[in-house]
Image 1 (tube, rainbow, N blue to C red):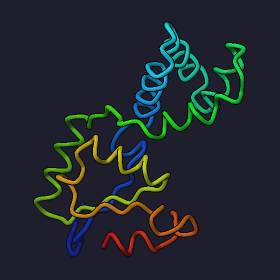
Image 2: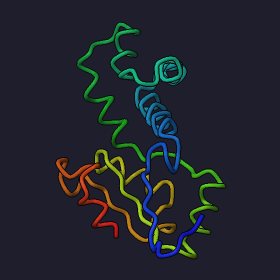
Image 3: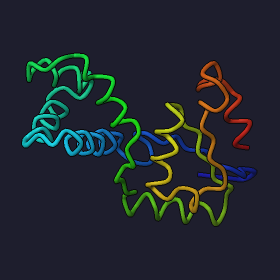
Image 4: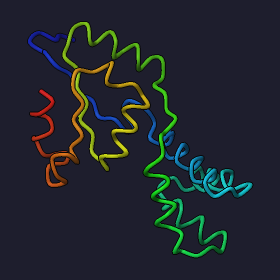
Length: 153
């Protein structure tokens, strides 16, 4: 494969540099801890395992016979937690090697607070040259809009 003329490589975040499921599980741990409910983490992780696309906290509230009015608070905890995440060693190594030859960037969609927290937990600021969170540009400029890519370059 030839890379003549290639000057930059831009990556996505979720399910590209790390498994997004890790963030979901980290959030579930934060919610379970905040609730102080023994067994809540196992219940949440079981739902996430069995139905990864399901609305996790809505399903859990229904399953446990709890009031749906709790949902906004659970989502607030999940979205606001400081995640525990790590890059796989081979991903970190690939970024380090690529950075010796190319300018590296990250373009990520999603809620700004969450995407920043993920990037910080993964230590990406030290591994790429530019972090672009398209939510800062407005949802109408999320991928596939070209604006975040131009900003990254």
